[in-house]
Length: 259
Image 1 (cartoon, one colour):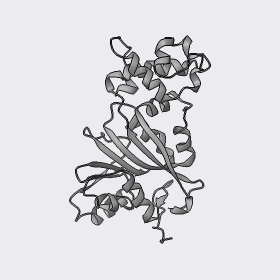
Image 2: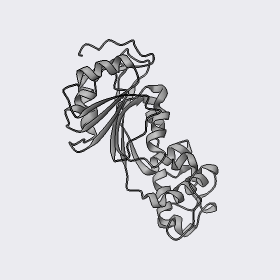
Image 3: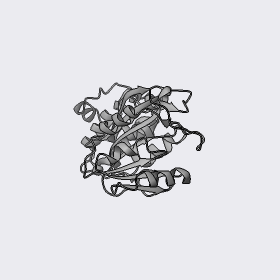
Image 4: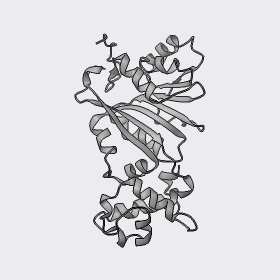
């Protein structure tokens, strides 16, 4: 085990201390020289140095002024790395297609995923370190919350591996997970239908699907009419939404979803 970098400047931060895991995280995102990569919470550069080596354009976002100075000095000779002194909760997200790679503070996991997965995001792929329990919840075959089902219907969420607390400095009390996210081929033109379908299903999880939607349409996409709505995966609801979407007027997306 390599010696861990010294921590202690940012309360609640657990810095990745194993270079091999940082390298695996970056490699899993299949980043090329023409890509744009957003790294949030760059800290001491454990992930940044591997991202820089890909040749991609890297936006390394860090809110701690001390770390910003250190990152700026460390990557001054890498023209493809731009260190951004900002809070990720406030900065505009890229308008062009981008990748996201980050070791996310546990307390910000929902906030950050909500930013990059909820609205009309241009996120293409992501490789993240998040709290183990959080990763298990959002990767469940049937998420417990409507918002998480919305994410899972439009993106493929995969819990790749467990990352032990010993790989961080200081070690957190629980393990982390490597979470992979990939945009799927769900069309934006069908998003209004998708939100309506998911909202209907999550309002009445114990109701048979046939009480909520047309039986023939359900059978067409492989949903049994008698199946309780709360047992249907977001991916199957997405198939139903795609099937139902053409030629119908659907309610507008809520502001929190479309922005």
